[in-house]
Amino acid sequence: MGLWQAGAEPDGWYDDGAPAAMRLNGIPEEDRAPRPQGGRPDLVSAPAQKRAAANTIATELQPNTKKAGDRPDESMTAAMSAFSGWATGMGLKTVHTTWESQVKTLLGRLDAEKGALSSAANIFVTTDIERGNTLRGIPSNLDSY
Image 1: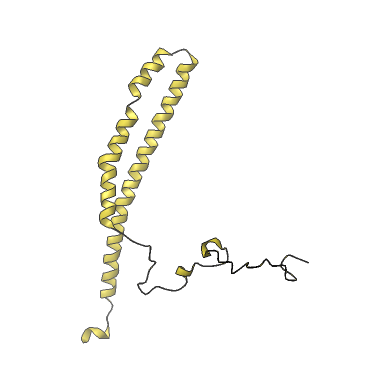
Image 2: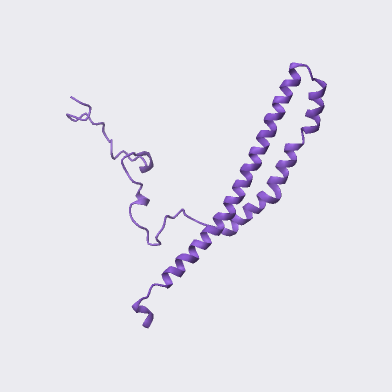
């Protein structure tokens, strides 16, 4: 006899008040019926804020990250040459190489985020304009009134 037979189902298994997001067999309530506005309440696009964020990345975060990433170069180079021939010198060289790689990765990621923010702002505006033009192009009997 299995767990699901002969009334062995745990009490409150399906109606235990757990949020729908925690259930594997359900669709969240907000996704079940179409909303009068036609979309989810949490889908918001703010092109101006996206452009501002992209600008902040370009004018503040990227230059400051580059400057901070270059800062340990002089002291690290001096320490590596002072400890050359020692295991410490090799360790410092490995740490410096890793640091440069991480800074390069971070700068690349910031650049990707900047590009994504810029293109997302443009995509939302362009999509809105295209949809509006498409809908205006559909003939309607109401146009004659």
